[in-house]
Image 1 (tube, rainbow, N blue to C red):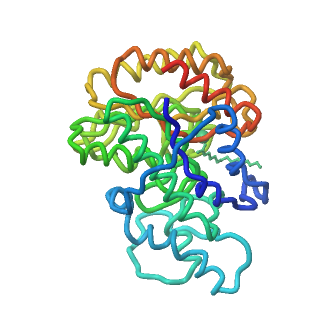
Image 2 (tube, helix red, strand yellow):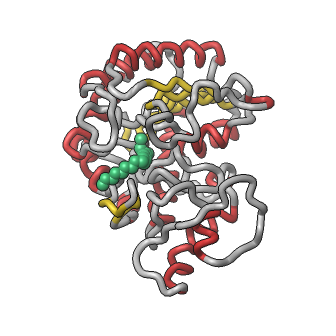
Length: 333
Ligand code: SP5
Ligand code: ZN
């Protein structure tokens, strides 16, 4: 199993996030990547695929915002990291505003995803890691993209949930552009991947299946409910399987069985796994009860289907167990 990672991904290190009415230390820290690397051992640097595959998924105005927001913030006399305080809630008009606060709200979904001077660079190389791991898998190899910052909450034109560029969506689109006609994404992070769902909502060529904490109780609240199935050409290629807090392997594995059966009917040329290990029993911000050994079982069930599998990192915040949990999953593939 080849591990793809670039040290520039460590540069994104916000000081804090706004949560439950106050500032709290940022949970998605660079030490997460170091904890995984310490267990996984050697990694290789990504090949630079440029901005093309990123712009094939993300809005050009949003990409420009990620690059320029820190300078605009400083220009407005602000200290610290860029963070929004107001949002254009529904059916916003596409107004050409330049005020940093208007842009920050226009291009984000929460106040938990700050932008620092190094954020673009880190997210860019996280996306390149995904694209390079995709190359390996499409060539018949096995690869894990150690994506950090993660991606699945980021939509075409917004950041959120610690995510800036949607690495799974970028890899899926790149696979489509390399003539893989049907691509499936299985998202097993604790949180629903609203950004990935949004990006492929109206498309029938990319199947999105997610197993996650019920959005009635957990972030991101507004997406991930069982009745969300896609629209237009995408009806039936979105599958949401919310589970209650406290879920253990038995129910998680059953849900994953449903997802894999649906994906099998879709008959993908490639499966992308958005792997979050914030489903682990000791995760500090989550409430499922999977054990380290459970990840090998889940991966074994995925591998049994026989599709080429590209695994990308999403969440997981228990530094002491991150490496072991990811290693367990990869061993099961
Ligand atoms: C990729 C991913 O797993 N994103 C998760 C975003 C969850 N955001 C809502 C919960 C935030 C809790 N933050 C607690 C920080 C403690 N210092
Ligand atoms: Zn998560």
